[in-house]
Amino acid sequence: MSVCVVGHSNPDTDSVAAAIAFANYLKATGTDAVACMQIDAAKLNPESQTVLKKFGLAAPQTLTDAAGKKVALVDFSDIGQAPANIKEAEVVAIVDHHKIGDITTNNPIFFYAQPVGCTCTVLYEMYANNKVNLPKDIAGAMLSAILSDTVNFKSPTCTEADKKAVAALKGIAGVADTDALFMDMLKAKSAVDGIPMKDLVFRDYKDFDMNGKKVGIGQLELATVDQVAAIRADLTKALEDLKKDGRHSVLFMLTDVVKEGTDLIVISDDPALIEKAFNGKISGNSMWVDGMMSRKKQTVPPLQKAFGC
Image 1 (cartoon, rainbow, N blue to C red):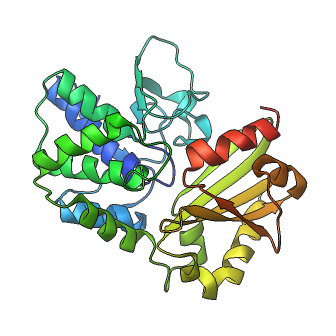
Image 2 (image 1 turned 60 degrees about the horizontal axis):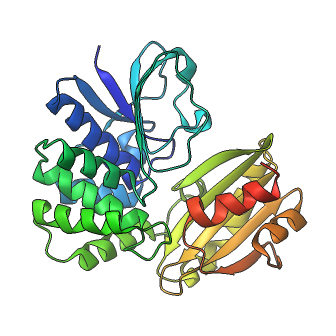
């Protein structure tokens, strides 16, 4: 039975590239594996589509139900972000860069995580340390994922390991200008014209368990927050509808890459709790949080503390 390598729900470029890279690594080291993702290829976010097209890679296969399958997880270890029936699957490996989640296993597994900005940085280390050949096209996707996750090194999650991985991967992939590559990805990622609200909301979205309360956090990285001015009311309405589906709060990060901060839209049963978490004041369902670039490092931890996790 092949190992299905799959990233989190609503996959971003790291989740997609990591699935491709780890599946290739497993095959190169003697384990049959296939790259998967939890959506159909047609629903893949614009940035990831741009990256796959640029480097000539096929999208991972669709996997929405893990029951009865051998699976390797990349870029997550939370049950809430896993395919359906993950408890009925055999999890054989996890490669990640987030906090350890609530996935449990019946047997010892390969588990490799590092406190770096991107799962593909962890995977690059695995390739390099074990002298596994890294194809040019996969190196390009991994490079793109690191640039995306670290916001071209602007995110506080970025480490020296991420920068070293980029320096090595750009050589393997034959990419001379990583700034230009990042801007191509940002143009795709920040495109909002004509996109259905639901697709924008779930472009980069995750649900979290905050001390028994379901909290959703989405993010759009933009060249300027003004890009969403014309659709802001519709976007807020979509977030309000999402909250009605059993969530205590829904937060949506409109991250301005140039200004290096986030206009945080807040739909919550307890707005005061959110204000306390970020030491701010909500006005008209939103507040500006200067310097906020990373959901993982700057949004989730303060919320966990505020919710008493």
